[in-house]
Length: 391
Image 1 (cartoon, helix red, strand yellow):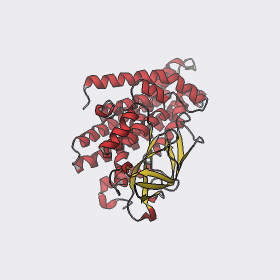
Image 2 (cartoon, rainbow, N blue to C red):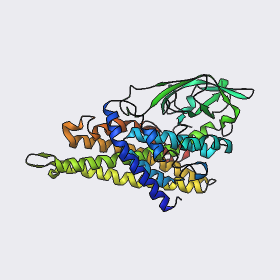
Image 3 (cartoon, rainbow, N blue to C red):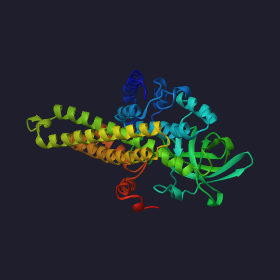
């Protein structure tokens, strides 16, 4: 576990980052443009390697501390938190967990300094909830691999310098493998995706690999381990989404409490109207239940990390991450919807925070596992493995 003093310092740095970022983020959101100050400010406050061990230039946060940090970051917007999920939770984490010592030394310190930005390239146009349907392929040729394929809806995909990417052997004769691809190489081309319902300040992209040469040394894990690496990484990713959703709920609550005390209708503050109080009570319950689930999932992940060979602890962490992500994303959507209702006509505007949260947080019920996939996972855990919908 991270020493208490170090955890407090990290959370204080997160708070300073958020306060400095907020006015910039709000302006970028209204202007519907990417926030190019997020990375420099994260670098300034040393937040680009929160979970990376100090030996590799990071701050060594445990999952509970990191979840608390992401909850605070989530209050600034789902787009802001999504950057950290892409760079740290599903970017740095698989390198930390499955990377060779050489890969860790080559990528992690530079990522912590902001010299490298990371992303996770799993989703494809025809492979969303079932990554086994991916069409990207690789072929070994001498001292390198050659990758071909298209990845879609990749957070940080247009700004990343290195992407954890997955592909089948050519001809699909074998299992998926994972690779670290560097985006400055010939054969890599990305395109930003801007026609999004929300998160205009965050980068989302698709990219194409055309005979992209990847050194043998950039294979992540063993050949054929890609699916296991992807699923293991999603535990980290799902907890990060859940923690960010907690932050959304916290911000919606703060906004409606302030607004309900200031706004008057029918001769009194709207906070004195019982039906407005109903919304506030519901948001508070969303917050309380989500916080409990997020912390429980984070604690389970830390317990699993402390006992890497314990299959039971791993399964528990995986299930709790799915449960926390499912509940938190739905609760955040509910909280944002209620906050918009309390704000009335002003809620239906991106000039106010509830409207921005409502637009942005909807994607949290899709990426890192849709509601439907997570429900199936949870139900199978209750019924038994033999009842898995997809086997």
